[in-house]
View 1 (tube, rainbow, N blue to C red):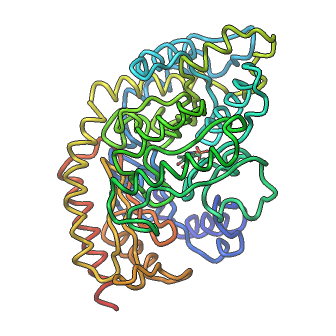
View 2 (view 1 turned 45 degrees about the horizontal axis):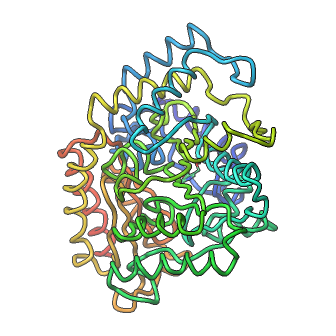
Amino acid sequence: MTTNDAAALAALKQDNAQYLWHPMAHPQAMQKSKPDIIARGQGCWIWDVDGHKMLDGVGGLWAANLGHSNKPVRDAIVAQLDELPFYNVFRGTTHPRAIELSARLVKTMEPDDVAAVFFSNGGSDAVEGALKLARQYWKLKGQADRHKFIALRQGYHGVHFGGMSVNGNLNFRRAYEPLLPGCFHVDTPWLYRNPYTQDPEELGEICATLLEREIQFQGPDTVAAFIAEPIQGAGGVIVPPPNYWPRVREICDKYGVLLIADEVVTGFGRGGAMFGTRLWNVKADLWCLAKGISSGYVPLGATAIGNKVAEVFLNDPTGQAAVGHGYTYSAHPVAAAAALATLDQIEALDVPGNAARVGAHFQARVRPFVDKFSFVGDVRGMGLMLGIEMVADKATRTTLPRGNPIAAKVAQAAYRRGLMVRISGPNLILSPPLVITREEVDFMVDALEGAFSDVEATL
Ligand code: PLP
């Protein structure tokens, strides 16, 4: 909708302020703020209600990987609405799209040793499913003491009580404590900010060793799983050194700890490979999938279950392997249809390949911002995910103090120049649709460079 009716537009904005509480926002502040009301999307582009056109540098929210007007996905959704809008997959019933999608996903993840999938409604659900299946796995193996989870600082795993408890950011935890007992955190291999070293290889080794020491400290026979994102997204796009994940896999194997890969952002191509774990040549035991699975067109989450975990459930000697978990809308037919069409499109358009090729150009063009702008401390990323960390003092790497307006000013300048970006703390995050062209990347970087220059000129 684009409305030229000033009164209708004013009413829309007023109703948003009055009635809608937004995720991750202060309700009182939102009453006074003027959020961008996005009305329409086409390809990699979006329009706000005032008709202002922008390149969607946020990809909806790391999700609209095929852009906003993919016809095959749209047609699959409409056809499914005509055929069967909803049925459940609880014990005793199922439907064709759920079956087709599970088979398709397992085939897609065959190289990762995946045996089966469990569906839900989004990323937080996918994480919750993985954490619960991990605990159940150990109970079935007669090791009920293995109930603890270890995760990374700066990690983001959604907002349910389990995911929130393994989150590594105080902002998402503090108001809801006490959290799930038995969740512990170790340092993330973050080259720009760590007290150990500026050598990536050494940092990967040190951080892997910190995980090993935590497992030893907790008692390996009490640790159920280690959960991490292959590349941390919401934490500021933190790319681990290449040796980190292979070492983590070794350590998990050494102590029998399950490895959960939260691929909600990295799954389905964003990092330049179909899955983030493949970037590091590692196989997890459980995978959390959402967002790109349906290109964000309809909410869907999935927990992929590796052979090792599945075998224990399938050969259950205890009679306790029923999965006491699931949602009314698990494997919703419309979402499953959207996901099947999305997977077709990912293959047909070689979406991971495009993310790798166009992403390399994107990364190379933004990296020089570190030298060009006084308040850019670090540029990091891989494929089509990129974070720019803004600092108060580059020499000392002093972080922007809370409430510093620089980040918001950059976002506003980018908006004016026709680019939607996301600000998360001191980080500007970009995660455009994965079908973006080289020319659109150039538009995006030019607009971004202009926005940083606009703000630099005011300092
Ligand atoms: N895990 C990761 C890595 C995420 O980035 C997110 C959301 O951004 C989630 C889980 C939670 O997903 P959702 O917001 O769909 O519940």
